[in-house]
Structures are given as structure tokens and as C-alpha cells.
Image (cartoon, rainbow, N blue to C red):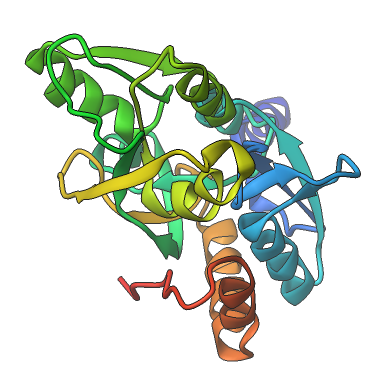
Length: 252
């Protein structure tokens, strides 16, 4: 009987999720090719709005942040494999994603839009690039491709812009604020403009921190940290620094 009880306890400890413990370190997964949300500065250090948000959350929670860089479409597999604790990478909350991961409260909200050279007209054969694994991919596949447009997926957003500048793409589809505050403010974006905002259920605007399914402990901690950033003005300060005059928080 004692042997059976010990075996039951061993099985219990094996099956307990590792995230049941209190956190001293939070491993955030980030895509470093999505300025100004996350990017490498001129010293090669990871920087950006979401990086600063994550570091501020860790400070409020008295834990250490560890940043793990990844292409966007590798973040959910890394989370579910236990290689990271959370995703802080402009990940919008969708029904499909909520079937496989959980989310914190809102980090920010921003609609989608295309970027193109002035005078560009979308028509059959127009090449449109987007970030692989993003909500923009779903829109491109379900809306643009049936219209005869050539849709092209890229591993990171900087590759999209590089081909747009080189003329291999006629348009790119991405988060509007990312384009407005990142690419369009850069030297390479000088000859491009932001198209109209696109309203579609395929591209929700609310972004949050991705968390492993059932990790209620970490969700509670992250929500507490985000609330503290709003309460003491840290969120407003970072918002004004990266997006002057823009309200990134919808309160949803």
C-alpha cells in the first residue's frame, strides 16, 4: 500500500505544471524585428515599447525579466513547449489563438493598414507582403488572395519592408501604428504612405501577453503588473515616448 501511495504522489508531481511555482524570473518571448515595439538598438540591445513594458512589469513584480528572441510564428510553439513563460510581441487576441493559449489583460490596441507608394492601386497580380503567423496572414489568405492578388509571407517584418523598398512588393499589410511609428519614420520609408485603416474581424486590434493555457498564476501576476503601470503613470509615459499624441490603450 505504501508503495502504491508513493507512486501516486510521484505521478502527481510529474503531472503538475511547472508554472505552479512562484516566479523569480519571467521569460518573455519577443520578435526583435518589429520596431518600435521591439527592435535592436545601435548597441545590439533589445529595446522598444513592449520591451520597456515588460521590464517595467518585472520591476513592479520584483522579478527578473529574461528576453528570448524568436521569429513571430515560432512564439506560440515555444510557449507551449515551455521554452518561454509568456509572449510579449504585439500578439492580437483572436478566437483561434484562445483555443491554444491564454492572454493577459490588454497591452495596447491598434488596427491594421497597408503601406504603399503614393498612387498604388490594388488589383489582380498586386504583390502584398505580410508577417507569417500574424492576423494579417489570415486576411491576406481569405480576402486578398481570392481577389487575385499575390500574397507573400515573410519570417519577419523587416524582410517585408526590404522587399517593399526593392520593388518586389507593391504593398505591405501590418499593424498601422507599427508602420506609422516605425517604417514610415525611417529613411527607407520616406517614399511610402499609410493606406486607409482596415476594419475586419480577421484582424482584431487588441493585443495582450500570451500565456500557456491554464497558467492562472502568471496571468494574475501580469494583470497586476499592467494595472500598476497604468496607476503610477508608467504606461502613459512610455506611450508618449514611443507614440506621441496617440492613445494606444482602449480599456477593453
